[in-house]
Amino acid sequence: MGDEGTGESTGSGRELLPILEKAADHPCFECALCCRYIAIEIDPPTTNQEYDYLVWYLYHPGVSVFVDWDGAWFVRFETRCHHLTPQGLCGVYERRPAICQDFDWKDCERHMTDGPPDKWLFESADQFLAWFAKQRPKSYRRFQAWNRKRTRAKTSRELRRLKPVPLVPRVAAR
Image (tube, rainbow, N blue to C red; front, side, top):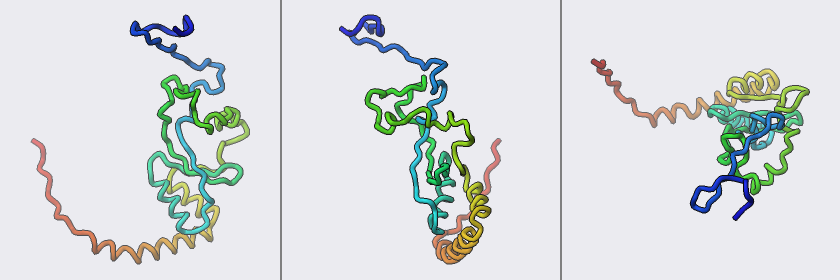
């Protein structure tokens, strides 16, 4: 049988593992932020289409875009790892992916003391467009003109594909 005192027996010969918790002095105590999102690096936007993609990303709940202090652009997806336990521990610690093994808590944005973790963070299309207009005004004006032209060209064709549906008045509940 296994080591004595490591857990309780279920009576079926299987041993229950003890519940583990992080100590209050653990650097990741009550955090697990790194297990609650993924971020994918993207090329910095340079074309109207790429700026449009950023707007589209930001129209989706749980998606943000950020630029780190080195100038790298990322799309961030709020999504919890399936293996994060209720205690904030890794449920597959011994066989976790290399990216998890290589992560050093000292690089965690929560432990940065010299300012915000990101140079720019966009959580909505409006935030991004306001930044775009201020930081890159010439590109923003070109983007607006491109978008107006594209929209005018497609709107009439798209509208022909729509069929009006008669509105039916709702019957009041009694």
